[in-house]
Every structure is written in structure tokens, then in C-alpha cells.
Image 1: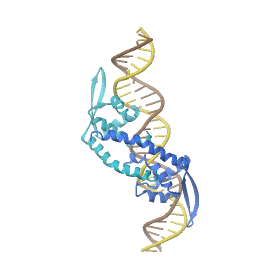
Image 2 (image 1 turned 30 degrees about the horizontal axis):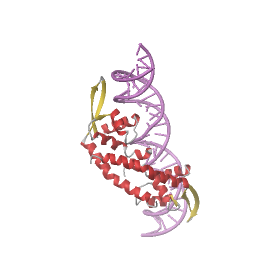
Image 3 (image 1 turned 135 degrees about the vertical axis):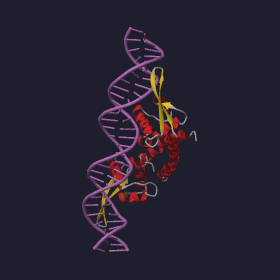
Image 4 (image 1 turned 90 degrees about the horizontal axis):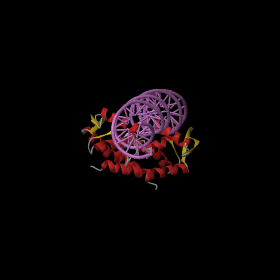
Length: 102
Length: 102
DNA sequence: TCCTAATACCTTGTTACGCATAGTATTATA
DNA sequence: TATAATACTATGCGTAACAAGGTATTAGGA
């Protein structure tokens, strides 16, 4: 997908995955890959941002001798999804405008 | 609208306005303002990019003693709109994914 | 007459963010 | 024993929105 179009989606995509239950970096990429391509160097900064903004909380747990950082969506995170779903109406209206002559 | 969501739309919005006929900076802002907020410091770099990418051509003409730079969409510019309208399907699919739990 | 708004263009600097590349380390598998 | 998979992180680049500021002319109202 076009990079600029993705920018409006990636944060919410990650939150949306976490709404199904806690997850961790590597798995989020795998789960999202069916719907949108997201690389590690894109996801981890997003997760950091989301954590700093209190849209997610984290816990670190050992799994097969390796540390895994689990991310859980917060109430604020769920609200952000809701806001997105409301804001998107404006997007659709502009889309209709662009499509008007076709 | 959310800045990140806008990023996928602004270029195509400008091209879309020009598809109705040639126009100039100030008027493009006015015409678009019904649909999307775009400031001068956002539009003029966009117009420059579009011109460099041959999506628009320009002519400068005097109007009431002032110079106006008119922008006209090219075939390549019209193609870019078409590509957007095709790409947007992916966007909608991701949108459906985000909306799935609601 | 003077001032403000409107018209019309442009540049600079800041900030945000996607992503390629690279680095580290462990476990599973062929 | 080597390679793929798992798992996380940091650095640097390029793109783009936008606030702020600058220049210049014309129109209209006080």
C-alpha cells in the first residue's frame, strides 16, 4: 500500500490487534501481515509511541529462555480506535469528492 | 482531519480539483476548503512536487496587475488519480479489519 | 487619507514517521 | 553445523504537513 495512505492506519492496526488480547512484537507483525505489511523497524517505534502515550501497557515475561515483551491495550487505546472510526467519515467524504468526476 | 490520514489524500485532492480545469494556488485552497483544510505552506510544496513529477504543467499569466501561476493536470496526473482509486481498495480492506470487533 | 482585509506567491525550520540496514542473541531444524 | 526462525533494538535517510514569516498588490471602509 502507498506509504502515505498507511500512515493513517498503522497505529490503529496495532491497537486493533491488541484488542483481541495481549501480544508481542513478532506476533503482531505476523498477525498483521495478512492485512498490511509492517516491518520490525516500523512496528517497534510504533509500540514505543503507543506505550509512551499510554495507549498500551507492557509486561515482560520469559518464554523458552528468551524475554518477550507483551503489549496490552488500555482504555485510552480503545478510545483511540473509536476516534479513528469516527474520523474516518471525513476521509470517506474526501474520497467521494475525489471520485466525483469518475 | 487527522494529519496522518490527510497525507494519503492531499496530492490527489489537488489533482482532482485540477481535473475540473486549470486553477491557481489561492483558488485551489478556497475550492478545497469545503472538503479539506489545506494551508499555503502545505499546498505550494505539493504543487512544486506535482510539477516536478510532471503530474501538472504550469503557465504564468497576469491578472489585475498581479502574476498568477496556473496549474493544469497532465495525462500522468489523471493516471495518478486512477491509481489512487485502485489502491484505495486495500485501504478499505484494512479499515474493515480494524472495524471487525465493533 | 489611512488602514485593514483580501488576493497571490514563496521560503525556512520543525516535527513526525515509514523503513532500509544493521546489530544482538537464542532456539529449532535440516 | 549451519541456517532459518524467533525476538528485540538502534541509526540514519527521505518524505511530507505545517507553523511562521516574508513580499507585494488591490479593494474597501472608516
